[in-house]
Image (cartoon, rainbow, N blue to C red; front, side):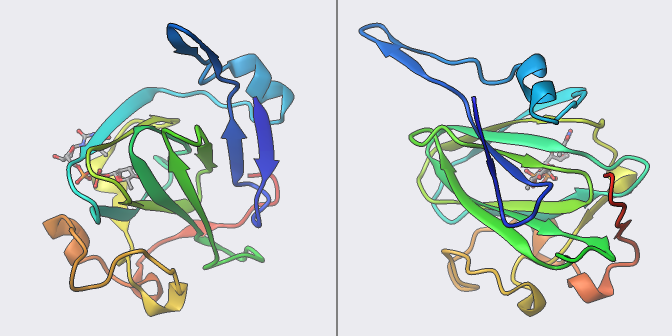
Length: 189
Ligand SMILES: Cc1cn([C@H]2C[C@H](O)[C@@H](COP(=O)(O)OP(=O)(O)O[C@H]3O[C@@H](C)C(=O)[C@@H](O)[C@H]3O)O2)c(=O)[nH]c1=O
C-alpha cells in the first residue's frame, strides 16, 4: 500500500498493491494495521456502493455535521471519476481549498476524505461504480451540502451547468458562504 500526501495534510491518496496473474488480480483494498502504521487509525461502520450510469453525473458536495461527521475512504471499481475534497474547517489554513484527483478502476487509487471535509465527484466514464467506507452512520438530519459550482471554490469540473447531471437535492444546495454550520479546525483532527 503506497500512501501519498496531498496539498492538504489530512487528505491522503492510497494505492494498494495489485497482484496480477493469468487468472486476474488480487488486492488488499483495506488493511487496518497498514493504515494504523501510516497514522490513519480509522474505525469504519458502513460500506457504500454507488453506481452512476452516464458520464457527467455529479454527486456532491456533501458532508454530515458533527456529531455525525464522516470520514470516507473512496475507491472506484469500474469506470473513473474526478474526485473533489474541500476543506470546510473554519480556521484551517486551507479553508475553502480542494484536493482534486482522478480515481479509477485503472489507476486503483483511493482517497481518504477526513471528517471536516465536503466530498463530491463527477463521472468520467459511463457505468462507473464507487465503493467507500465511512466512519459514521448515515444521518439524514446531519446531511448537508454545498452547491457544486460555487464560484468561491473555483473547482475546474469536467462538466458545465448545461451538461451536468445532478440529483434534485444537489441542484438546490446553498453556497459555502451560506452554510448555516460548518466545522471547527482542530490541529489534531
Ligand atoms: C448517503 C446515503 C444515502 N442513502 C439513501 C438516501 C437516498 O434515498 C438515496 C440517495 O442518497 P443521495 O442522493 O444522498 O446519494 P449520493 O448523492 O450518492 O450521496 C453521496 O454523495 C457522495 C458525494 C458522498 O460523499 C456520500 O457521503 C453521499 O453523500 O440513498 C442511504 O440510505 N444511506 C446513505 O449512507
